[in-house]
Image (cartoon, rainbow, N blue to C red; front, side):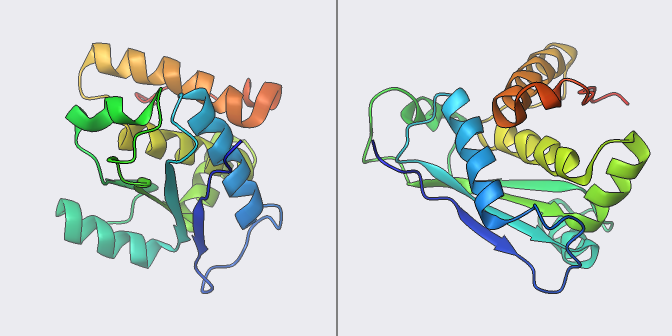
Length: 172
């Protein structure tokens, strides 16, 4: 079976909140998420863990919002191309379907607020970002319900039963 290659960048300027957040751990939970979502093994994502300042710069540059955020997704595919990533291998589709960028600082603040572990929050944000890469959104009520349900199932694929205590509610 082909091994999925996930590129992970952890900014050397951040303080690692939990030593278990390693490139290997991030790759493993990403692989579990993409397998659950039926993304072919030849397709992967890039992950970057960075700080608030860099997230603020990215948010301003790409979305015109001058503040930090928790997660940003940059897709290499259009919604029309989503079908290329499941089922049969397709060499025409790019190997890297996009990048998910997470602010470690914001993840830590949110984990404290939600009273969950830092790793649970990172997994939550990663799953959220992956779903956005694949074209899911939560702008309308129907989209929100669909994405929340898929987010819960994806978190379960990533973390197993330990994910059941993580609330997935985009309105909160």
